[in-house]
Image (tube, rainbow, N blue to C red):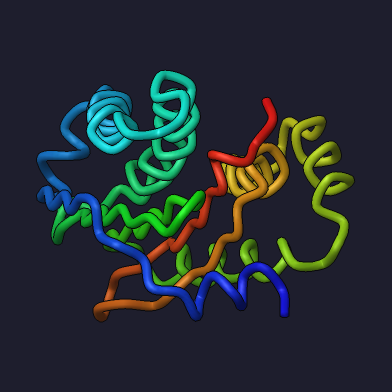
Length: 171
């Protein structure tokens, strides 16, 4: 059984839920950094190295929040749920997303499972014309050993489910 299948069948404990109107969230780019730092500090206090854990989680969450910021949605809510099971943190980030952008994200996430993540990541970060979202998702998969899943949620919303095994990362 692959790690993602094992994690999917595991009970996660909810640590935190954040809901914010998209219009409020997208009013200032700094909200991405502020929210990611706040959330990471809230849930990292009981980890082996809380500062390191908070920094890693904040960086990963910030990347996801910035992707939702770029959706340009002004209606609806951004919902961020944070869960934990043993050494894995799960981020479930839902936000309104136009259908064309949703299709683009589904294609990106499908492409993460081709077995060539590192080679694709190197190619994408060297290509100035590559979509930022592609670099972000590949960066999470390669640098954080993240498992990423995408779910269609409400009518015009999208949910990223990102499992981050932060406690077992060496660097």
